[in-house]
Length: 126
Length: 126
DNA sequence: GTAGTATTAGGATTCATTACTAATAAACAA
DNA sequence: TTGTTTATTAGTAATGAATCCTAATACTAC
Ligand SMILES: [Mn+2]
Ligand SMILES: [Mn+2]
Ligand SMILES: [Zn+2]
Ligand SMILES: [Zn+2]
Image 1 (cartoon, chains in turn brown, blue, purple, cyan):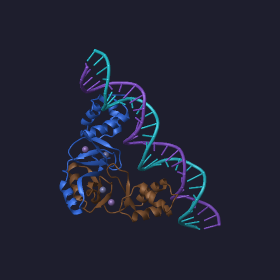
Image 2: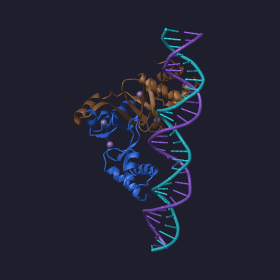
Image 3: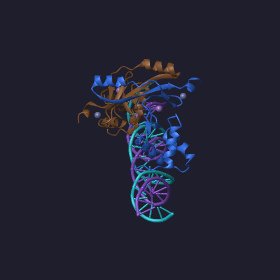
Image 4: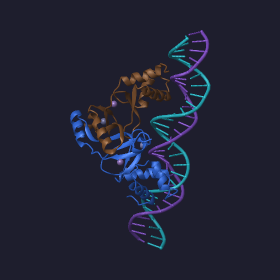
């Protein structure tokens, strides 16, 4: 059974308070302000445990390191090609697309993920 | 200016003859049959050069190592969650989606990529 | 409190990819 | 053909994200 530790709690609390889709390193830096001697291994292990608990999810965007966010219903992402920022996109997920492709191809399709790329607001104006 | 080498040519020739979206390692193993002492560094460097030449493109699917394919027009991919196989999907790329999201969000959207996940033909039946 | 065990810190390890470098081989002109 | 230039190579070292390992620690149930 899972024990409740301040390390795990701090990681989850940080993720619950941000929309930034942070990397493990960014989470480490942030949590270290509160628990200065937490180790990176602990961060990685807890990120895995929290995933297994269904509380957070891991995001693997094109050619970047893993990012993490609190578990939400499926949604699309945008990544700025200049500054790397990652944003949630409100556009509804097209479940019909999965059915259509499954029918056409004979593949069993569980889901799909979609990533937009371009320039964020800040990076457009400079 | 680029020089023409048998190493670069063998890598490109292999990619032109497969639909398998191979990894750098798989390309290395294959090309080594022809050029036994080619080094992995040479494979990686040529994969980069061939990309810069616009002849091939790199594929970064969810949480996997890079895969490579001959440059084609934009298309979606499917990855089997069991065997890892990667397939091209014929479904037309929805450019209208980019415009719609750009309009709604104010982001400058260059393109999007989409990855289906599920079970391939082989892995469904066993 | 005590016992049992999940968790931790910190270091070692793995693995894909990149960087480095002296030797090699394209390209091209004399 | 020979020489010169310079991109490319083979081989090895280095990097960096992520995982693994282990003795010490701290939850939790009793
Ligand atoms: Mn998100
Ligand atoms: Mn493809
Ligand atoms: Zn930006
Ligand atoms: Zn399969």
